[in-house]
View: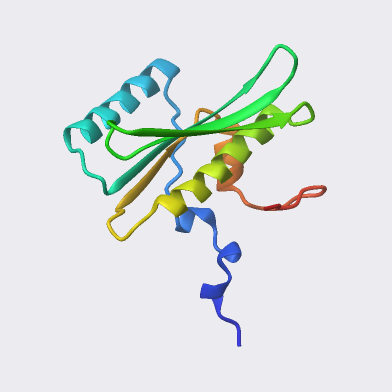
Length: 141
């Protein structure tokens, strides 16, 4: 018997999420983002998880990835990972998004209504929208 509901990896990420990639300028995107956050701050409930991801590359080519988590803008939690010298910045963004999804899953409870993950890497988000595995690529956990 073939149960599709048991095969989440066969589902397109778009059927479970809403990935929005702005086509506006950075300035317009920042204004839109600020409006969203202002609305969240006015309507503070602990039923929404909000997480920002980021990555950095030091002068010595050290790659780091991290996240900042909140539900109400009064309490913040952060996590960071040192990914070493052999990681690309693009990979660090994908790593941070993966860790963010894992983190959000652990923080989700009966009252969680929405999970918002913000990333500034459009290439990583486009890659997540198209989950086709190509030559020399594979999923890892």
